[in-house]
Length: 167
Image (cartoon, rainbow, N blue to C red; front, top):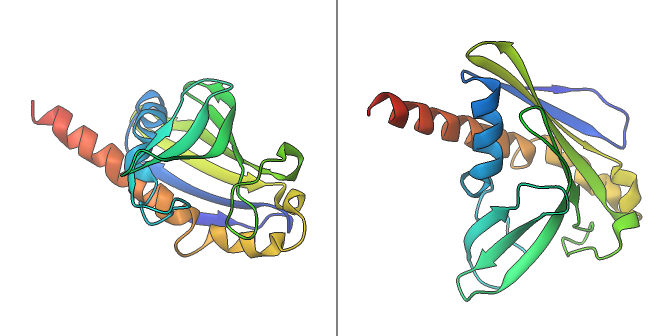
């Protein structure tokens, strides 16, 4: 996994997984619940599951153990198997942002490097749209931020591959 220098209002991380591009895209979009850590939670209760609705106009939301729901992103682009763009509807105080003009974007690009090898680049951009305090989001490119999501994604692609080869 690597991080690339960007302008100060964006961050980028990438990872290479040993699966075909179609498989990588499908795991990311259909099994996002396995990728997003449960501890990344804006609900008052533990998260039971996270849902990514795979279509333009869909949303990304967490469902709590009590049935409560927190929608924290909108699907802005859905272009299988190469591109997914979601909004980041969370403000610098870690609360849901209802004004779309004060949200950033997360673009995930899937590029085949070989038949069984895919580079996944995640770019979180327009962080300054969040207004005062947006600089705090620049740490999402390190530590427990987006790199954790990509490592969990890699693990999910390996689990599915191992499961498929064992049948």
